[in-house]
Length: 435
Image 1 (spheres, rainbow, N blue to C red):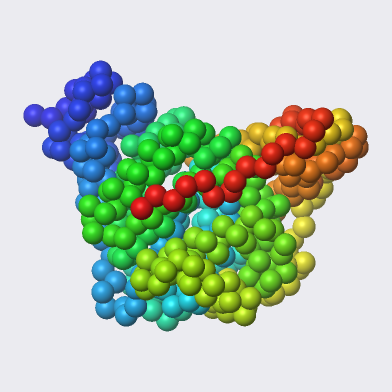
Image 2: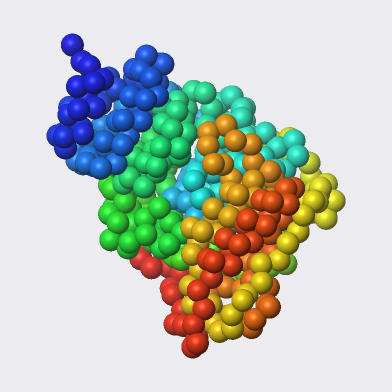
């Protein structure tokens, strides 16, 4: 007879679990027959001792088996999704999904909430008044067929095991585990009914994978699992040693995304990465070479067709179009403070993890499961890596509805900036492509 205690002990001691043992633990925890403290122990044991290739594949399979796998075969056209392993200021999905849909790719995107220091696509979307991320699979499919994209949270039927474990990982310091990240991401993505997947694996001081070797290992695991399930999968390693774009925070990231879709933003890092990842989705789905697909994506973005698709999605999912068309009408935070430099020089490094945690302090993220996020809490990055700074220059602007939180975030942001006497060499945003 299988025992959760024996399974935890076996994994703690670095031994491989059988398919039956993994399936038992996942199934029983999802059903509520095992307590959180045993699941936490299992996660921590996995964090320290890892999993073999076979265990990762089985863990992914077992989590998928706790829910339904969506059948999209009755909806014509290629289906693809993109997933990021999480970063600070990473709002790429909000721009990429409507842009890919405008290029003819159906995009059924299931996203998560904020995890640790990183933001969550669902939290960003829910900052739009009325926007619904929870829906039945039937409605999910209807919106996808009608609009060409749908962006939702996990339904009760889709990988319920991951929904429970995802929340537990966030508060037990077990997020940065390659087996757990792989199975979490791929169980959701493989349940969506997609044909192709593009993975954005972040690396740097603001990523869960801080070392390139670890990020590469994670990317290869996810590509391998996807291909074993017959999907077209490509992964990119991209830089997260400073925030993406200028805005951090749920509503502010929606606004920055809208500005890009309207052609009113000069955020080169956001635009360049979005165009590349979208082009990869188009290429995987159509067979078109990447250079040609990128030109088509650039033309589509410039035409405003992606913005119109975004409006179509917001309308279909119950969101208020007035605040999208006029972001200035959105409620304002009570406190706006500036984080000013106490030194002169060039920004040589930004502790992106620290900036992400400053956003959590403001109320823009979660310190524990069940915390509510404040949609107007956020940070505008004024000075990025390589830019010159004088004493008294504003490094960032923070927004919050609590004065003490805002002041604490200001102090953390100031301490997150490292200055040097000479201008540093820039880091490449796109580090590697893995297919």
